[in-house]
Length: 433
Image (cartoon, rainbow, N blue to C red; front, side, top):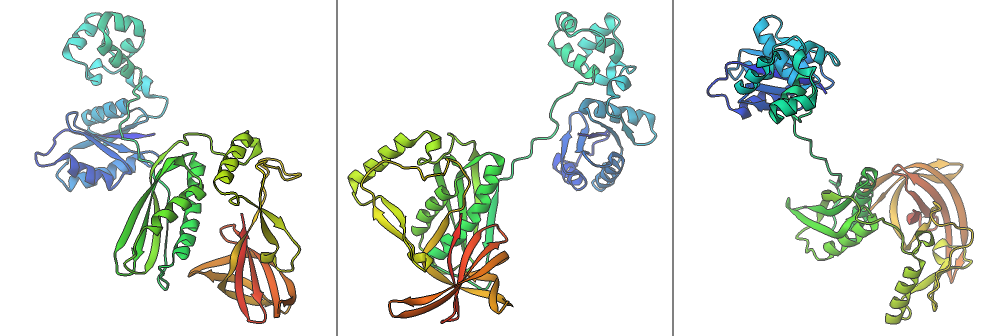
């Protein structure tokens, strides 16, 4: 990092520290003011130090700060000394000390540039230590034994060693996501949960990328009457699991009485922290938790015998009719043959009832090929799409003809759509995750 120090010899009486900061922040991303030392600091990282100091002097002149000299270096103390030394030279108002040359530049300078106390300066000069080179050549042990801890700090400066933080650390920006819709508003719980699910995917993916979990999330509902409703949701422990937050937010949403229709939703992370425990799947045998899972299932079955069901596949021409749920009477967790724990796989998630959607399509080989669709007022584009897979027949006394398409949206979600040819209506059957 390059520090640009501004030495202000004549500080105007009416100029407050906030006035200087406002002027300096107009030209630099970070700034600090040390009025007792008559210094101001600029963060010159990745910037032209000469141009930065020139712009800073121009802005300071607007509030009456005229006599300013500047020094630049990767070492804060060296930048400050360079700024004061440049004032004495009365030439180019910026003195830049190249990286790696700081100690060599300091060596011939008098100890006065380090601003020692009069007592310490008298002790050092009394034994013949008059320059930064003389002080830097000594060992730390000898300095500390003979002159004390105060002299050790001065010895570090003479060796161009100044690790102090000039600027406060920047607060971490927590992830967030929002969605507003101008031509659509709703009070339907399922539609709001659908939008929350999409926004939570963005937020939780960002949390997982940072290696942290959220402890508190805040969601805001924009209401059609120009008001907002804000609700904070807190988890028992820090987590980045989307399913956990969706369940908590749905529960909070169910308790809210909406005064009008909702026109937008925003999610913000209020507090983050490292996951308190390793997150895993209770039913993942590779997570060494099979015994705990069986105990949990057994306890649930004791409370309600038909609470645990197993999906069984059956032959049916329509996909939503291929799964039949049967009650499980044992608590042994069986691993699916050929599937190792932790193996990545896409699992179909079919809606209990297909949902009607609006689709924009284009003709391909005589069939309507979907390009994008609108679901609950949200417009979603399809990056790729394959199909159709045509299915027709009679179910009870009802004739059906369907054209199934599998598409990949821009956000990576794989969806299953189909067109009912008889009714000329498109439907969302489900997706894979």
